[in-house]
Each structure stands twice: as structure tokens, then as C-alpha cells.
Image (cartoon, rainbow, N blue to C red; front, side, top):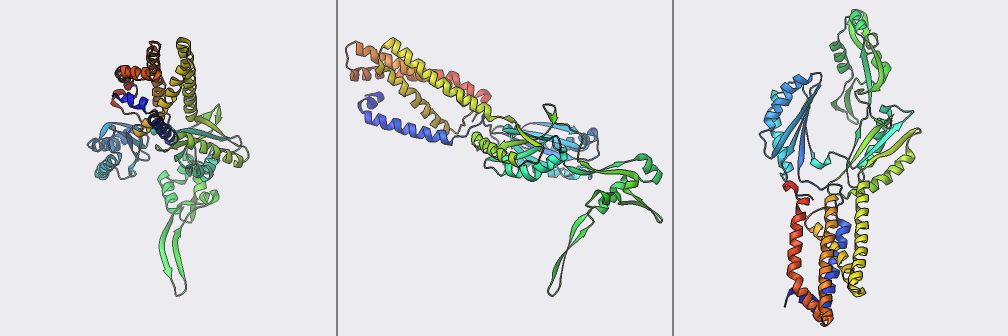
Length: 458
């Protein structure tokens, strides 16, 4: 007795197994992670080192090159790329696939610490961070702008109000501000006035560092009183900065306003971000790798609606980019394809076999097989993404082919005079081997779609 006989002779067992497959598939559909692209088990370690005031050539020779030599000796590195600009060295270390990211981060950090003593003392401590390779693009980009408020005012509102609310949403990895500019006191030095007062730029910088200082010096205790002490020379207004003394010449005081123009501005004027011709400040929302993108972005949209009602007068917010729109469209296309496939199969089988009973078999087999395939996707640790959706669409052809072949063979035995029970037994026995061989052959053709270049797409 072949395996197929067991399910034909015991229909209750077959129904129970099918129900188990349906239940397992339905729970998998509810719990699977939905992403736009497959999750790759690789990461990128970034080492950023600031060297304020140094040109790109100096930064490359004294910071980028020594760090690259030290980092190159670490294990698990696929390749290293670096970018050196005015006052900043950025080194991106791409790790090999499936290499433990935590171990690589510790190894790279140790090697960076070995050469820290060789770096210029004016350079800042290298900042090391790690992020998945597929986290280069956010799941959603928001644009904030105003025709009334300045960019630094918009950025300040995002930092204080919007960013904490979006970062607190379940499933959000981080919400970063892109293209913003924060409040900063700008001191524009006047060379002519500085020459007249015999004041150098170094003297101005030293005066600002010494007179804009805040530090805790300890505490003092009495019999009934305890006080915390602090040394505070912090400046709080533009007028206080203007009255800052930068040089003494006997009884004459040279103040900052005498050699420079002091104003409240932005920390940087090196970038200009626009959308549809209007200046905007963007915010990117990154989703956790283990979270469902559709659910997370849906919660983000709900929070954006609440934020929109509380925005200051004249400020606007728009959704500039939403990656889940493509995912929704892809899922809708797959659903439409499955419905059309079932209808076409029903028409073809009824047209050639002329039996409504024969039509029922593929109508049941196609959804049941696909639901079971979703459970296997969960078992193997894959996610619902563009490649797995493509695999589901391709698998419909396999299911339809197998169902039509079995139904046609059983129908042939029925027309030869056998009872439906005998025809089912014989038809299944004759095709169990060819169907398995045909399925394995077609699967071998489709497997490279999901495993290109040895990359396991999850």
C-alpha cells in the first residue's frame, strides 16, 4: 500500500491533517514579519573621527590611513571603504555574511584603541557604530516645513516634540532628523576690526572657551544644610556674548561686539534641503529588523495624524516616502493573481472535463497548499518580502499542474469503468512518483531566484 492510499482509505485522517495545515498556516500569516526586501545576515561597522580645522589631505594621512591599517587586521571583514572630508574621517567596514556582528564590533574597537595614541591629540575620539546592511534606507521619510518658521526653529520643534514621540512607537528602531539645523550663536569675525584692536582669532576662541563654562565642583555640608556647588560662567543671551571681554589693554576692554557680529543662527549653513521647491526638514523612521513593517508604519501614520493636529501655526508635515505602499501593492497583486488563477483553473477544468465535482478538487488544493507553504516559510525563518511573494506566485503553477494531472488521470479511470474509489486509488498510485519528480525539477529551477550568489534571503 502506497502513502496515497492511506489518505484515500481514511478520509477523516486526511481532513484532520488538512485542518492542521490550515491552522498552522493562518497563525503563520498573522505572525510573519513583513518587509520590502529580504533580511541579510550581514552588518556594517562605521568608524567616524572628527579632526576640526584639518583639511582632507591631513585627515587622510594622520587619521584615515592609520585606522584602516589597524582595522584591516580584524576578522570577518569583507571589504573596507573610507571617505575623508574637511575635518572628518569616515570608515565603513562591511562584514562577511553570517559573521557575528558583536564579535566583529569588539575586535574592531580593540584595534582602534591600539592606535588612538598615534592619532593627533587635537582629533576627537573615534566613534564606532554598527548597523545592518539593509538599514541604509528608512522605511518612511517625513518632511516638515514652514513658510513662517526658520529651519532651526523647525528642527528644534522636531527634537523636542516629534522625535521622542516617534521613537517611542513599538517597533521603531530610531527616528533621525535629516537636513535639519539647530540653534547656535554665530560669531562672524571682522578682520579689519580685529586688526585695529590687535585681536587674533585664537584669542576670541580662548575667551569663549573660558567664559562659557559649566562644571560641578562638589558639595558642602553644614549641621542642618547641604549644598551642591557648581562653577557656572554660562552665557544665556546674545547681549551677554556681545559684552564678553576678549582682550584687556590697561583700562581698556575689548569686547566681542567690537571685533565681530554676534547673532542667533544655525549651527551649519552647508546644506539646503528642498522638496517640490520649498525648504524642508526631513525625518527618517527606521523599523526594527524583527518587527512587522506594515504594523509599525501603520502606528506611525496614526501618530503623525495626532502630531499634525498639534503642529504650530504655519508648520506642515507630509509623508515624502513610504516603503510599505509598495509592499501593500505587491500583496494586493499576489491576491488578485491567486483569485484569477483559481477562476481560470475552474473554467479550464470544467470546459475539458465537464464535471463540477472535478472542479472542486483544485479549488480546495490551491489555497490549502499555499497556506501550508506560508507555515513552511515561518519554519525556515523567512519573511514575507518581494522574493517570497514571487515564490508564492510561481508555486501556484506547480499546484495547478499537479492538481490538473491527478484529476485528469482519475477521470480517465472513471471513464474506463472503474468506480470513483478505485479510480482515485489507481490514479494517485500511478502519479505519485512523476508528480514528486516534476515538483523537484521545477523547484530546482526556481531555487536560484531566492539563493542568488549564495546569499540566503530571509
